[in-house]
Length: 492
Image (tube, rainbow, N blue to C red; front, side, top):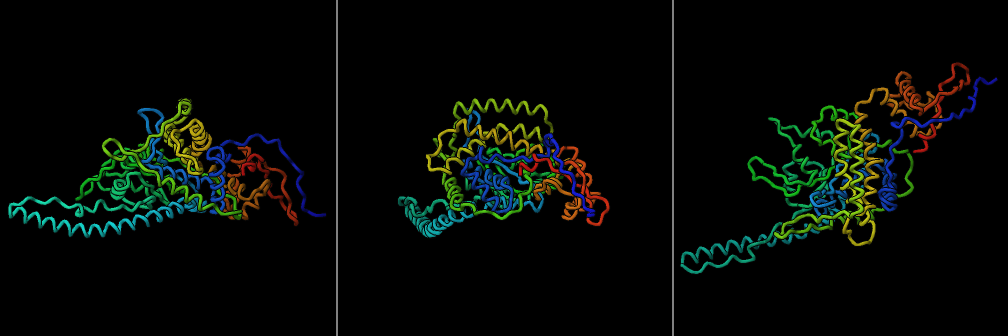
């Protein structure tokens, strides 16, 4: 008789799993529409990354591209820049950087194309500058002669002024001091974007100065689009009327936990939209993303111009909310107030910024719609755009923040349980044995001692149920067999 005994089929009446173990899926189609949803999905597959990382880059890049050319204005006295900071959280193998590069690489290509045109202008300017030096020198000699001989002083010739040197645009900067960024922001008043493969080093380096100096005040203003002056040793100060710099980058969970423990309570970290998806399934992409579409979209955004005031000074165009959008914003602010009642610490600080974030998102979504269509530029932010922004915040951004900030203090057992759940989703298991997990030799799940606490947590959370195992062909103790709650795999 064969010693291998198949378990009796067992289909339990599953309750809902504990919510903390359910995937927080980004509602791409509902928030972004079919055109952008399809592009993000295709780009993510090509990079073997979750679509969440591609979206994180897109929101930050589009917000920075609009920059100070357009601000959202719900009503008089309240205006928000479209600047968004996004944080892609994941382990080294989660493909954070490739996901972000799906948008950053086309952005750099657009920057190169525009810089080529500016370089031609700079070459023309350099020739004019050489001629201007000669004209200036000749004029000064003529002035000296006129003064010496008591004659009328000649006017300075127009040729002596070559004009301002064309500035090479910087759409994305990987690393720069605040002094350098201030110069760039002063020369490029629309703003720019900072990208970092690892945000932890950048955040921790803000207090690197002897004597207690810090970059944090600069970055707090850079998020809000406020005026700021950077004092530089031995050089004149640099003043920026509207300091607007988007930020996007990646961070590992362990580094985030360290940051949360050491973070100053100034709201800087709470300004980030944290994105922490489960790893993408390993599969071959079905196609490649439309490079012409994304490059054309980003070029169209960078073609937006700033307005001028009565003194001919550059300023944003203020895009108003429709009355229906204002009413929806009022209701959303009431929702946020109710959420704050059960929050504390960094999560409470994050929630306090959600009304402003939703206004920024509504502007970004309005312009994402515009660049995906041949329509005229929008003249207001409608209720539909704000409704989608509120949907994104409530159903995705807020759950992601809860996960990011709460998981920073998870027990080792809970961390192991989440690691095991990621493996289950990756493998597509509906049922599995403990031996199958151990054979994968995954970090933190490679021994029975490491695996058992993870199994216990998931069983208690109604994610798994243990059933009768299978005896090997040579007899012996049957291995442990587990069924997976169908609700968990239904999200994959």
